[in-house]
Length: 211
Image 1 (cartoon, one colour):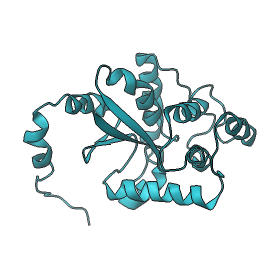
Image 2 (cartoon, one colour; image 1 turned 60 degrees about the vertical axis):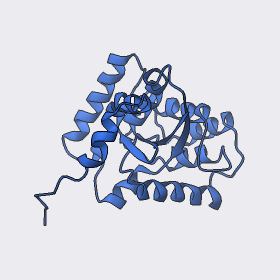
Image 3 (spheres, rainbow, N blue to C red; image 1 turned 180 degrees about the vertical axis):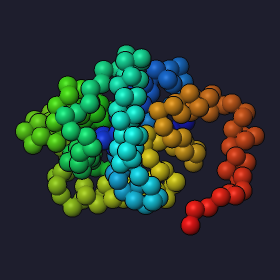
Image 4 (cartoon, rainbow, N blue to C red; image 1 turned 30 degrees about the vertical axis):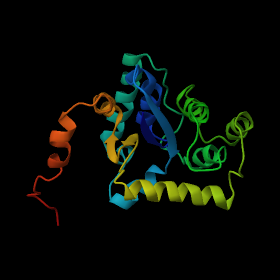
């Protein structure tokens, strides 16, 4: 049985859609999943990149596309009242539910749906308080241990060449994006393509570097 690490940040609509579609995308396969919260902003800073909502034009396209994808796939999704927003409270609340760096599907689902269903303000303090009351807590969400755990999760993900969310790591291979779910499935099924092309594709020489 293969083990998948699913890297997520509740800020990302693509991570939400991938989370909702994962069971159907991998239906019939034998696998286990660890859901691992990371700070997307930390990954972007590490790799020197920008998020979709930080690029003029791309922000508008992103919001249109994710709403379309929800419509096309039957996954309920509404934009929060404000986006981007600060996801740290949700990430820390998630990690407060566990003694290590991974959370269970119930916790991930509860937070994702709180953010991406209903069109409300994800950062509203009263909603965060009500959400916390519905989730198990074994650590203090604002405590040093949880904050350190989130940093460790993010640093470890960056070291493994995770550059965004959603990302899925299995056997040391990182698959990125909602549209990588079919590729992930083929890998889990044992498609020989991966033995032939995975490593070689990354060895193409770079003929253009920006100064």
